[in-house]
Length: 402
Image (tube, rainbow, N blue to C red):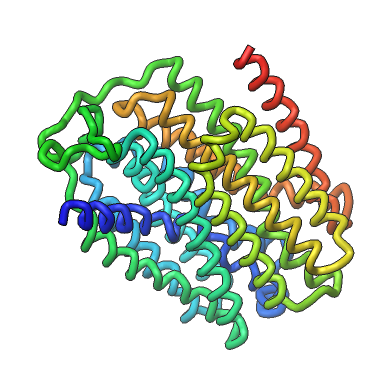
């Protein structure tokens, strides 16, 4: 019975991450939204998709305060209710500015969830189980994004506003969380001795309340380094999500629905990257990061130069698989190097970096458009940047081993 309860708890914990990366799940609708709102520029519509990340960043920056004032259960419940209500509202609206407002509230809801979803894994589990669950949590993000993007693409057939109904999934996730995840006391972290599965013994879960340590300057510097790196990865991934559907349509390879389908397939590649993370890091160790950064660079170049749909899809899958693996590596390394008492704050710093990367992605694309209107230009830029970072990571790993 205890083993069964633990499995259900893991399901409940991971389910919260299913909706964290859903802000871009409606990217496939961008060509249709352009027809619905002809007065809006392409950059304005891309901003409509990405604007939740700005509010997400603000809420994540405030998350350590919320974590001290409110229990985990309250934060996650409020976040999921906000996502469900504000996410579905555009289905009933026809004003561009009203939809923009609901997207702002969507960002607030996802921002409430973000740090809690990441910290739950680091605080409730440890050891090899934690490493596996960090990868599985990333897989849950990409699985949710895949399912929601596919559903949005299917609903697009019925009209431009139907894709927004995907955010109703927040109500189902809320049920799973409330039904399967036991309450935790505010501030409880896992510093006590764990069992062989890496799980805090159930008899001690309610009683362990270590003091909240003040995060040190060295830990802040370490978290900032991870934040910049993760922000770069997310900016690349969001740029891919925003431009792949348009790339498909503009090059005559297919319709908006085809572009959404390609995006969904690529996101499933990210799911595979997350689910295989535990095995990959065990085998590759420090070689993993430079290897997959290089693979992501190759994927971006393939997207830019692909002459047909299958090759473009392959490039997108390579990118998502590799970038998801690198992000999993980032959060696992953070949990290894930051004590649990400071993990909420460190995770918040890194997640702020992630969301800043997501927020600036449309502006990066706009700047690239000013230089070149070629659809291949953004992908080639990201390929060059990721290749340079891969080379840097290779020499850093070699120096550490030496």
